[in-house]
Image (tube, rainbow, N blue to C red; front, side, top):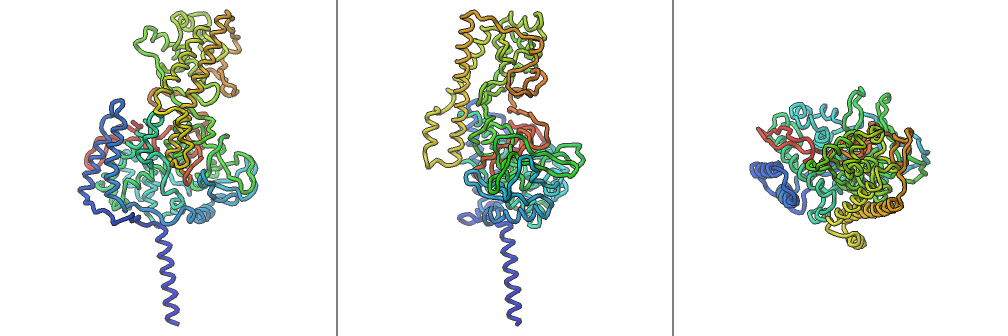
Length: 610
């Protein structure tokens, strides 16, 4: 009898230990953990911090800087081999716990389950028929990981004393995630265990895979993202080791670059803006379960219910039992999807490439052109977008190009002539050209500019297409080539469109066709077919932003489902989800930090990506 009791107790003990081993394990790698002294590691960290905090490289030297930074990071990663905290088993093992935890916490779980959708990764599968606009998913606030929950956690004392954490909610979320992952009793552990252990963001690319992005418009942001992440890691490593308020953090004995890279990617693929509990401010949050949804084209269907204090999502369309449930993340370009989410969305109706344009201050007519543009609400120097569909240019870019190509007399007409104020409103309307000559010049400019941009790529569209036919192409390489090809196709279409428009207006000029005259009722209409788009140009939010910033198209004012979300053709374990609603593009989800160091702490030198 005693033997049976002892055996039973032993079995229970072994069972309990087995469960704990699933919570976290120390990845041992292929060999013994390398021996590295604290001093040696701090020296490497200091060298990395110095390198990442140096002035921006001169034009053409960005790749060289990247390889140098990456070399230092790889040295550090080699020293840290076997020290990163990972969960045992596969993600599939933890989804039942995620669903149980969500249900116990007050989330809705009766209409769907988590399933693997092959190339799209994990997503939500309907377990019953769901009607369009039916409220099928809600997540209460207590399940969310937020900046506020971080302040109330073990990292609260450090947050109160570190200016960077206070200024950068995304960084705070990353540290919150790491601290909770290291806590076997964390309330959020069922959620954290369900996250991917690796991502397909460029932070995880091999160097030769990043090299395939050279020439694309994404590459500069990819290199900056890596540099910023390395700089942040070096800063926070020193902070964790030296700051008194960090002494109780579970990261002190093990905080690797791989840990930070994982946290950064988890946050930047999932963070979202929600209102604070009193509705007075906006805060950042990770939203468990809801962030499993993949993307399709459509409309915003998620919001925050302040009365019930929960995120709510209604169905985008009718779903039959066993069909995948999608949501619309927003109007991101494929470059943004690749950089921040690690996937390429083939059917992206909002794909575009950036084109930087400006009126030269040395030009004789600069003051007049700048004044006309200012009256139209357009800066004299902007990053515009060339779109994948027709028309390839927005009303704002059309207006800019028309002013850019105006003669002195035409500028005077729009500044001082009869009806000058009203004429400003027609600049973005394709139906009312400034003159046939002006139309010819501006479409010639677009045709030529697009053709010149195409020459900056390392490969042609034909070469990209041939490479994509290779069966042995790795996932990351395939994504990089798909992005390169998509950018070229957009520019090719823009150049062809410019040529067709040029020929059309040359014919008009040759025929002596009269210019269309506008009526007073027409002056406020812009070119787009959307009824919502037909507004005075100065009353709409510009799709373009000032030079040096990323394009941000904010057509929605919802707390959730904004256009900075990522599309969800996530190739690996939902790596492609940035969630709907991030306003303000957070370069790599973690903006760059300053470079001055004193007593293990840094001042914020630049909160935006360099």
